[in-house]
Image (cartoon, rainbow, N blue to C red):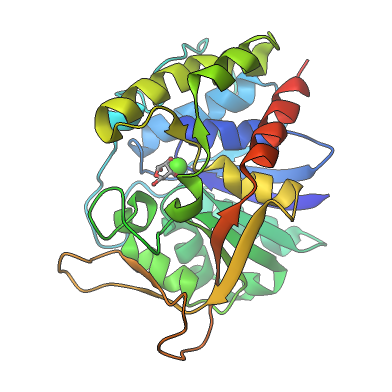
Length: 308
Ligand code: RIB
Ligand code: CA
């Protein structure tokens, strides 16, 4: 059983991460916190609370950072649409957000936890960076940080940089240099788990509330990813974080030094992962280098089937 806090910017693939995290046999989700990223904080927060309410999950949701530390907010409408979760209409919200800002929610929850907690990030790292700076003592309650972000090959919003990191490179710098165990699920691996239409059709046969959400979201996600990147199946970036906790053999990691490029040139926001240890610097991250694709999609299918 993993105690987790999931920080996210729903976002189609963030929604699938929430579906996986909602499985009580694997996770004690202490909370879901939100950040701007795929859309504005208002939209990502509404989306997160809507998903939790729709799936009837007993998980508090706290709204977080509306802006990165230094950069301006940049949303990703081309992929996630005007709502941030185009493709599925939720009923009007009945639930409310936790009254605390996400950063205070994260700090309170960690300090009150009797056991260590795994922090999972599937969006920009602003909330976790600010929580670590506001109250460094939370480090003693953090088992590890697993984040979807970065790439040791090419980026997806610039030649050099991946979206979550480039949204807030300074926050990523704080997290990567926190000296906590940092596990990075990078594009190098998430571009291997492409959600083809044949898989969507397979999931549609499950015919429950989770499969309806998955199918409707993935149809839009696939259409947008095809238009923008030419992919025949959308890369399911974010759920790899949660899936890697469900089966520790799913993802292969390599312990390397990662530097976040904070220069304001064409590589701003790049994760320079020293995969071959050229520079012999201190190893500060576990970077994903491979994934068992078949196992990943079985984990997703099992999660969706677990909803009545
Ligand atoms: O680069 C992929 C990441 O950016 C994913 O987390 C996706 O949801 C977007 O936030
Ligand atoms: Ca995301």
